[in-house]
Image (spheres, rainbow, N blue to C red):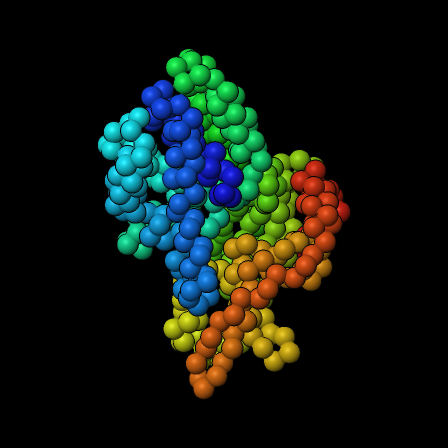
Length: 340
């Protein structure tokens, strides 16, 4: 999830653990704990593109990381904060660190909660930024901060924030299950044979959902809004073009990218260059023609070796993207999903 959401969750957890004893300091250190796992993003400044992707949401997002570093952070805090013991600060830090990847596991990217075991946990039921999750939670947290540390209203507000946010996560899982049946029914009605399907919410909401579908030659992408007047989903087809890679598909860098994308990728060619496109995150604007993929990597080949360069995201008309998204959420019948 985004940094603000993780700060809010960490602060709320800190309050639950130590708020009655140390007041707003519990929220402060909980918020800090909630941001620490995402410091792994700085790896991109010191290593290559593929390694940086592998590091993100890896070790720092694992239970092991929380267990190892919570006592260390707790010890550091206890050196200057005498209002609670080392054990209490360690306990606060553990829950702040641990709930961060736990929340991330509901996103499309997921997390390696059980690192070093190769088990990816990704429920794909909430977008990385969702105001309906974050804003009510933030409001309850602000209300709690304004209360004295021994006020019963303080814990009541925080508990309400946790209840509302957790209920929203559960609702998102239910909506995912419901929309999955819509996508499956649409594929069956159109006689489309497929080997795999993944569904996820579109940006900033859980009303509009997207399905990635794998067939023998293509990947299909379709969208369904809970406000759509009909339940028959039309799909866009994206040729896999995996054969463009030729023998390059055996290259270690390519194999790492394939593992990262879980096999959901298409290869495109432009001006004699090959591009690896991670299909899990779709196009920057899926409701406009020829919009670039959100995550695309240029494959440079020199002396038989492949190097990977992430394509810089092209400046888009953000206002138009949001407008197209909003129209599609409303069940816009003119949304440009094309029947294959």
